[in-house]
Length: 405
Image (cartoon, rainbow, N blue to C red):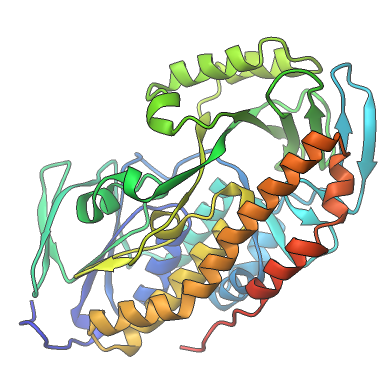
């Protein structure tokens, strides 16, 4: 290891990345390309299945193109043709082939893809030189001016020049270095659940949003995926209670919570809830943001949701993670081993972009609340996304440009 203040060529530097979803494999790809020795640790036994349909937009499209994976991402996209809204009895209230609730405008260059499909593409792009440690995680880490000493849950101890936490909104790396989650997480008043199910509705590249007329919950959304061979189910639960008080840790308890909240729901919800019990990829979590004064401390930095989650309401989490991974890798290369300079430049490049994306989530939530209060059709709300507050905040987002590293 180097002595304090000494710079090192990338080929002499080791970087540990915690998390193998989107940001982690993207960062691993670029760091490996620049000559760093890269290790990725992931607590799951392999690439995690399931997850939302996510959007690759703007600078993330450019990053994907530079990685040579954009065509494959487009090939594996959801390719939705449109959406409809139904009531408790299954009556169609409205439909459109211009928008979807999950992916936005159909005619945009953006790509909607399942999270697990994108993760597999990014993982494969990295090649064999990147070391992946599955079914393991960071148990402890200690750092000084020269190195980071990591002990893994498996008991293995190793040292690295740098560590990057790309392990999500509930980042364990962040907790070890920056303290308790409640100091950084801002719950936005709702919870999002998702699971896979058979496409028993026979949806053909289509999305159906079920709008409950009674009760406190907003309903459900079902979309066909993977060439209509399966479906993904999304539900929302409104609650201002923070995760520590509201959300059980046990997955079966979480499923019981969803079942209770939707016990009186109509449409196809009884069947969808029945399929939830056997879904191996069920996930329920807070719709939340992460706000931090700094994304790094010493030789440890945070990436994506771990450092600045905007929440699913923004539709920009994937774009932020991929763009930020590209920027962080480029700044580390250009800094020639000076992580202080690299981390500072990383934040300068991205702070305004992150703030604008987090604002999108707040604007989107306000619009949905207004829509529910006024009993306005969701499709009408989607058609106004290019007006007013949305136009103002998207102008900030679109001002961001990737540097050439």
